[in-house]
Image (cartoon, rainbow, N blue to C red; front, side, top):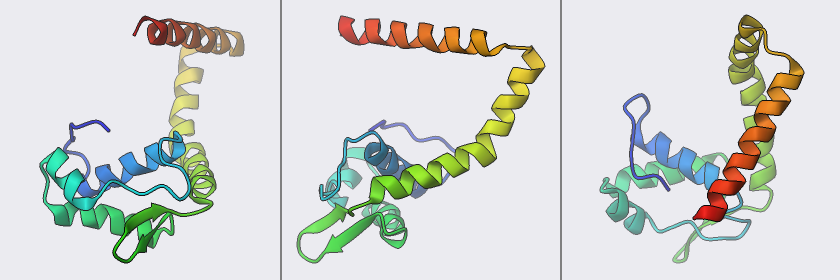
Length: 130
């Protein structure tokens, strides 16, 4: 997880979003434990209550569950729930801006697909070099 926080969103929300990204990216899978509140608080130098608030939000969304004495674990179906929600959010909040930019710049479908193919090729090359 990235260790930098930005000022446009509360830290607990940024921590929550990082866990969501880890679930969507497959870093955390169904049944996997979340990093402990204490470890995350120490690693990011934040108050443990801030981490707990982020985790509690995930519990409230039914993405993770608390197992008393053991910690918090990713619920079955969490990734599917997140994909639905994130797709809906993208289509309603981000896509209209992206589409408006595409229209404003007069980009064609072919140019967009070529750009995507070029980006995929360059990111594969960068990964190989690491």
